[in-house]
Length: 465
Image (cartoon, rainbow, N blue to C red; front, top):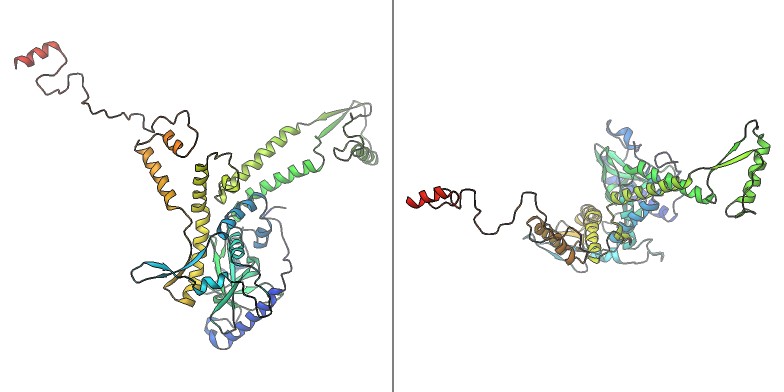
């Protein structure tokens, strides 16, 4: 089954979430009693006509549970590379001053809260620490395209968030009314239709262009390519799983008859028992055929060679999808020098990691920091994209375009090997160096002057003049 066609049944969720769901259901009842009756939380969700059918369907996108379970192979490697990088970064809170400048607020309650591992009242520690939360969040954002943090407060009416709990995106369903997401339904307990207000969650997500209320990550649009790579890997696995023996076609001589089914089964079993590459009793010995039969070995090596190329092609495609250079994964065959690896790390941070961190920052600020601490505060990741590296790349590009340095000079500065063409400056076909001398024409240095050099008779006339 492929990524599009494979269907999974929801698995049983951990029991520890039931306590939180029960508290949030009570919170929803409190809201129904006195707070937001005008927002429609007391009734079933009503969807606009244009959006109704699509809310309950993923359209041409795989289900979220499928995307979570299909993060395997190269996809898992690429996603984990980004997730590991994000989880290794540090968060800080800054206060924006009147002049537009910002300063870091040391030991701000938001950062202290996220980093602490304070036990609950019953003595149990939080399920995930901050770095684990960031890693899970990145994995969810790159796969299904959305991640949810549930706010855990001191009490039902408290406005102070004490900790967060990361939820699987396949168990959270947005509720839409009048074009707005007013809340979510937690698909943890069977037949649970309680709407939890949106203010109790932090949703970090990439909107789906085909449905503005649902999310779309990087994996879903690559379903066909992912399935192609998956099927090629399954083909290779099946080949080696069954002792990697070449496929053989038996040809009978003229006048021979095909054996009946029972005889065929006995023959196949006897052949496998004798010549199986791993467990056959006669493995390694020459095989013998009954008289009147010839064996033809198919060109399996060619098929395996194509399979290897297909796997490599789709591996590169998936790495490009998630913008992960091979050197970040430890493969330095394409980047033998340290400088090249540093450039790849810069590109990785700028184009793969930075978009994820920016989305996390915006979500935390809009849905948590500003409502609880005020608009003058902002949470952000500490700087991790090197500005110096960006300057060096732009300077190298400018030096090449303006013919200040030859490619080999830049390669030498990066400790790369010199190339056969790098000693020449990059220039256009008609470019010529400027020497400072006035270029001579066919009629002399100055065609309008008196002593133009060219024709001897004309020179004599110039002297007379």
